[in-house]
Image (cartoon, rainbow over all chains, first blue to last red; front, top):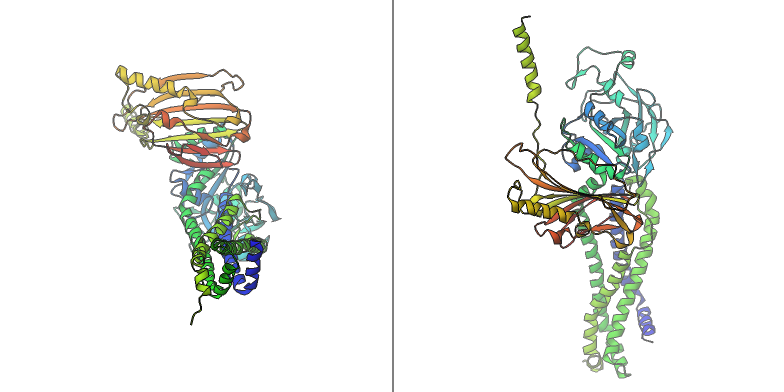
Length: 416
Length: 200
């Protein structure tokens, strides 16, 4: 009975009520949307690298090692000598090891020297492998495989020539030994998209005539001669390692971290990612705070709306009372109306969120490499919605209590 | 070349090689223990590294009878894993391996142990105390190294590990956990009030 009354009452004021419901819906959609983006970003971030058990580099910090070896942000403090690399590769626990050599660039993108095994073992988003959509992998010494973003930004197709620059922002180019785009990796949403991948030998090859970071003037070894040379590297920047059994990870990690011949560092990618996220996570809390404030604002708006409606409804309330409604009924009616509005707002908000997600998902994935999963609301989100409805009922208590006290006297008295 | 030059040459060449001495020390924080947990195919291995300060209250060489007894008591405690770690009931885990020793001195020697028969149910227990010759007197710390191996029937039920450890050793303030499971790796900071790590 009272539910029907509440509905009827809301319907009678359809315009103001629908505005309030819309405000709540938008705030709820925003709050849940931020939550989705946050968890999606966190998952995408954690999915940048998977399947790798240890990242090995020179001893520095775990976050720094992760940043330059996986995200290509910042620089290495040191290199790892080829001898140490071989020592690690020969450990019985090691299943596979992939070297990474950084330090050169092509336009704004980093060049990474590695082996064909990188394509086999680098996994992202829960075990997905890199797919070379166009062309093939690193077959020739001067083959380069580029990420999707490199191809899109510089408008490169398979077969295009690439000249690698020495260092990260320099005017010296390795133009005597141009590369050729051999393949383009499909978009992954990982830093691989922004990387030019060449073979480890190629990194050595382009530095044949270089000494202490500069080209020896006038010296230029012909390409045919370089192809005949022994191009095994003297050092690498970092290495990705997979172990045979997970139970051996920590043992190998300790062995590497206490390797006496060279200060090395081995980190578990998952642990380093989590440490990095803890640093970034402050912004996350701020985002949640802001969107929660939006919800609070919407609820306060609803309270103001109910307060002002009390004035319009003074007569109505008085008639209820005159017809025998108890003050508590009036109170219940107002609280119920508020809860209904909030519930409608929450439902509409959910609808908005899922429509938005469905529309934005492919765009966000291709533009930012951020995968927003469309999944039914989690327990946490449902609890948030219930919280919004509860909070609405709670704030409506203030106008409802006012109506409770004043409903009879106020409405019945004839004001002059 | 006269033999004397040759001898001279040998010494000058040999000296740098002999002088190659690595000096490094691991970080050692009192109150903070390190725990590594690895899970694979129903097998779970837990490594605990605890500063001697947290466990027995001193880190000097156990010379007095009292000190030696304290160390022995601590190792006995570590050899009863249910007082140190707790695994979910539903996982049905049996102890397959337990190893505890006190590690003193600043040089890390390797403790590799393999070939433990995981099919046997009888506990393979080993308690020992390593006392190395003093390499350097300054910055000497001691650390308890403990390893537990369990075989579990239901890996899916293995969702976390609790640490009654804190109740046994009131000096221990924090455990830094690193774990690797089927789904990935992670880290957690445990305190006496939140003494359980959940694998995500």
